[in-house]
Image 1 (tube, rainbow, N blue to C red):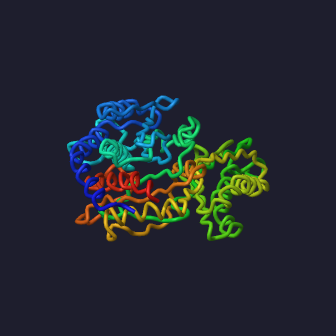
Image 2: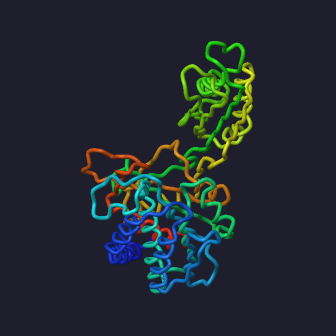
Length: 399
């Protein structure tokens, strides 16, 4: 699928950009930006693409970048590389020279590395085009607001930037996986992840006379404890449907039944069919559980992302290229995660695949986890991601 001479060429070109890409990633890490506020990041990406002679455009929402690298065929892009660019509202707890300079914000999910990888892939692909190796055109997608709901993938879709693409590929940092490894999975690789909000109201009253009022606290407690148990019996266990509450509040003093209370949590599901059905079933179950207590109930299910489902052909193509350009030892499998990923919306519209990129230092005793202020990566993973993406740009031509 790949000419060995091309693999060697990709390695050589990637090495020429590697230190620059590490510096670029560290600059993003120092100055992280939240979803749909990524103006500095957007400008930095555009400036570097322009320096390489590449034209780009900003999404209509104001952040995020699209760049087409037209191959020798002159045709519109049929291959897309997507990287997310936003940070999280989490403080940086690391003691490194590139520690976040923005209080309460940091790249705790590896999106700075994702951005550097897609940028690097673009620089390598542009050089391959100059050398006459690139026939098929490639689209770079620097997506904003992956961590928000609704997420930035919907911005990309709304602007029509996926139309005409045959495959869309993405990588996500995996601190559980040693650097040098890439994890693949055909089918669902993440879960549907939604938010549920339950609000209850009653007249309030004295705790000495609960029979003369409506006990909002008891009704709320019934819902938050019984709903997860009910779902375990009403939904196929293989769907992994679960509700976990993260915030519950009612009342302010011990001897007064409050007139209102609320609970917020997350709903996660491994199966697309069950995920769709849950948006009707769960609110109805909440109302049934609360009905005996006579409280007024409002239930909102905020649809965030469906399960991210990798297409078989795209996954096999990506896996095959990884074997050829990174070596068979680099290729491994990965499990389905209960985390959400808004690349799912793109894969619901177009074939493509998301792979897990190992970023853990093999000598590190602790793997750490995503969405922690302590997250850092082995930066040699950036070049690995660039080589894989650049290989896909050339290999897909011959697939």
